[in-house]
Image 1 (tube, rainbow, N blue to C red):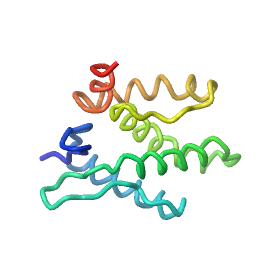
Image 2 (image 1 turned 90 degrees about the vertical axis):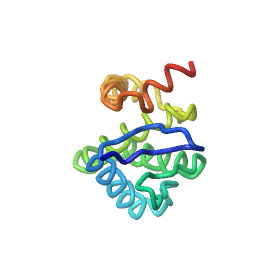
Image 3 (image 1 turned 60 degrees about the vertical axis):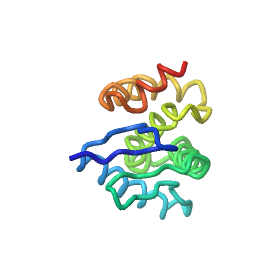
Length: 129
């Protein structure tokens, strides 16, 4: 059973059921903390529709929090959610701008996550580019 994340009828990430539910739950918790909507809407069919501009603003807020966090626990808690979200944005063709040092620091993790997302976000970004 899968939990696809879709944008305009295109699947950006065909997540496994548990991975998709956990990602959505973590995003909701972070959104509450950031006081921003996620742009992720679960559907009756078991998928999740992405509203791109809202999701992009959410990921920007997550990045801003991660990049400015002086607390290593806060930085660590946001990192994996941020990396997965960045891969989704890349797959949607709408990446946010990262500081050069952060692009380098997150680049390897983004590539690994994109590969594990299979035909999802990472692969689609390559097809578009």
